[in-house]
Image (cartoon, rainbow, N blue to C red; front, side):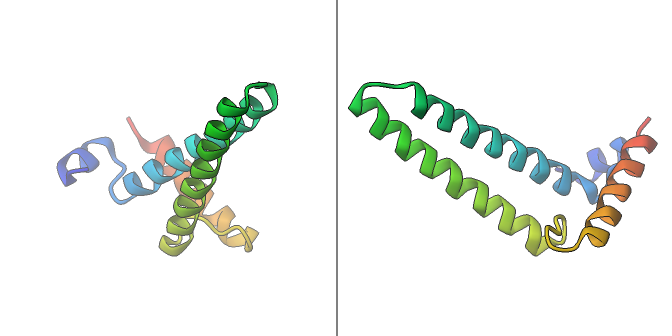
Length: 97
């Protein structure tokens, strides 16, 4: 996102983190939806297609997760660091006018 838009929204460098978090949540939702669809289908061909989509969704989620960890946006093994990141994001959201 261009810097002028980031400054106008008051999000600055947080924009990338917000987009990555939204993408991660969307990917997680996709994994869940494909899992449900797999349990509902009875056609072998459809099941195989859904399995591939499910695996692709899991791989996408993993890539986003790893990206977020590498950027310091997500700290799954350190709750105090994650709390700090979450509080900063919440404060930024509250400051948007």
